[in-house]
Amino acid sequence: MLTLDYLAALAETHRAALAAPVRSFTLKSQVFNPWPLVSLMGVVNLSSDSWYRESVVLSVEAAVRRGLRLATEGARLVDVGAESTLLQASRVDPAAQTRQLLPVIEQLTAAGVAVSVETYHPSVTAACLKAGAAVLNLTAGQDTTVFYRMAAEHEAGVILCYVQDAANVREVTDFHRLDDPVTLLYDYFARETERAVQAGCKRLWIDPGLGFYYRNLSDSAARVRHQMETFLNSFRLRSLGWPVCHALPHAFEYFEDEVRSAEPFFAVLALLGQTDLLRTHEVARVRGVLETLKVMPS
Image 1 (tube, rainbow, N blue to C red):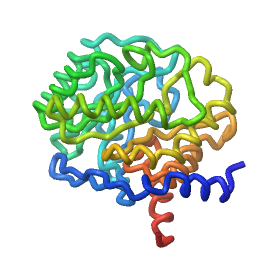
Image 2 (cartoon, one colour):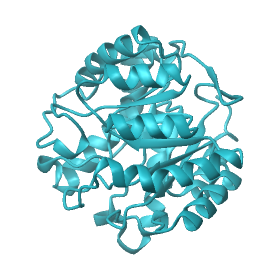
Image 3 (cartoon, rainbow, N blue to C red):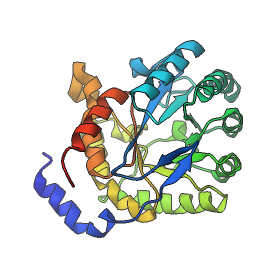
Image 4 (tube, rainbow, N blue to C red):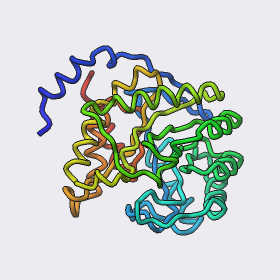
């Protein structure tokens, strides 16, 4: 059971990280400030394999409608993807992804919506940034410099997702975890943010990748415990100086028919851990959580 004693000990042990300065930056005329000025990123899934049915759209028109609605509900970024990261999901080749993504990006961008594109393919990245995508949600774990150079050329932001020991998110196998959930993350992001900066990137978020599939985290209790611990320890990554992004998970084994309430629950833990950007399928519900927590003075 999560207790106040756990939270108090965590804060006391890592008190210096609580006050670590984190960069703010301007992207597509929007200023993204760090926690407690939290931003929301909505989700548009173009893949029928995506299990979160409310986010799945199978036409350009439906995708644009959902993107506009998410922006109206409070999403400052709308993340669009054409391939699910689930184990059983079909692979979608880069040409097909590009065909699906470009008209959605172009129309949302023309309507003033800042679009993020989730991909691990260089060719998809190049086409989407050229079409106006403001952010690359990068799910590649190796050979990343080429992506950073493209983002820098277009003055785009990059969400650096933690992909452990694999070329990309679709190639991961087991998750090798230490007792301290931050150790591996810190080393990975220290290396990758340095590479990104050297390539010319100035707008970065770091994302621990809690929504990705790993074979040995199929046990519900092990996976959710790992997710909760990582959320609450995320403030320690602030020592790197870059804002943290989290994709909110679902824990459907526990929430069952109320699974749409899971992301708002996990949002509370992510916000306690001083997360700066929340990726959510439930923008309106999570916005309510965010606004409620602001009532309590710090």
